[in-house]
Amino acid sequence: MILLDGKTTSSDIKDEITLEVLQLKKEGKKTPHLAAVIVGNNGASRTYVGAKVKACNRVGFLSTLIELTDDTTEASLLSKIDELNNNIEIDGFIVQLPLPKHIDEQKVLMAVDPKKDVDGFHPTNVGKMALNLPTFISATPYGILELLERYKVETSGKHVVVIGRSHIVGSPMSILLSQKRTVGNATVTITHSRTRNLKEITLQADIVIAALGIPEFLTEDMVKANVTVIDVGITRVEDTTKKSGYRLLGDVAFDEVSKKAAYITPVPGGVGPMTIAMLLKNTLLASKNNN
Ligand code: NAD
Image (cartoon, rainbow, N blue to C red; front, side):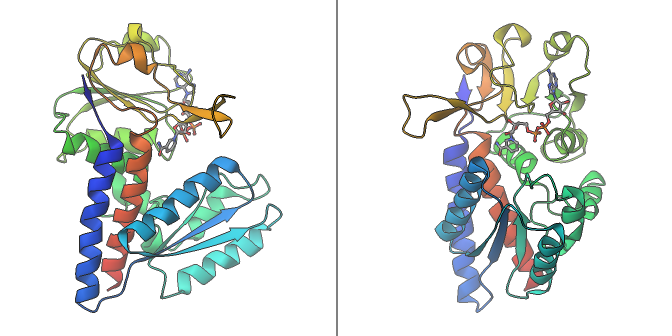
């Protein structure tokens, strides 16, 4: 079994980006600048945003964190987004999801200028991605493509089964892997909560991508020998032995599935760090487009 090590790979990518930033600075070009907007006090969201800001510092980007309170109105969030769209100092920005219930998430994502939409969530960018045109690919599926590429996992002609059809992971992942691209050309089956006989389908998979958010859902009896398994899930479960009071579990029963797998991502240290690295890559692209 080979561990698809997202921690090391993302660190390599960050080193590559750091060199590019130094080169940009040498050429007198603008330093890439990412802004992140967070609304409310969700603990996991705060951790993710904190990690994104830290990653910006690591590669030499500028970063701006905009923290808004839980009771922020939709109108004032939209006006903040308008400000960021028009701020020439900011190359790209993200609005950390989920948003409080009283704010229409879709409306907010639609308000982001597609040229600054480094999360790749705007319908214009999703459309371009679906048509295999150059654009910002949303960071989690992009990170999975990159991990498969760097570990030279063959996808062409393989049967990929994606579990989960969310707009941010399952759906784009299934589209990308079916496309004619370096990591692609796969035969893809997308499955979801209404899928019948899931086990029969996953047993046919050469590659399983689990993105459903149910801890340790994918078990050893659901996969064939030498499968490649990508575990996207991150669920916090209470653990009093940890200082934080919780530990992170993926969607895959790692201990048993890893015995059968040819390649597998761990949780933590797999897809999570790759997501952050690809957000940086998208920001670098936005900045180059701006230059
Ligand atoms: P979501 O809740 O939006 O979607 C879950 C999907 O799983 C749905 O499409 C649903 O139909 C499907 N599903 C639910 N139960 C199922 C079942 N029993 N069988 C088959 N399909 C089922 O989730 P999401 O936003 O795509 O996130 C999924 C997981 O990935 C979560 O744990 C989330 O925290 C994690 N995540 C991780 C990263 C990362 O960077 N590592 C990024 C995004 C999401």
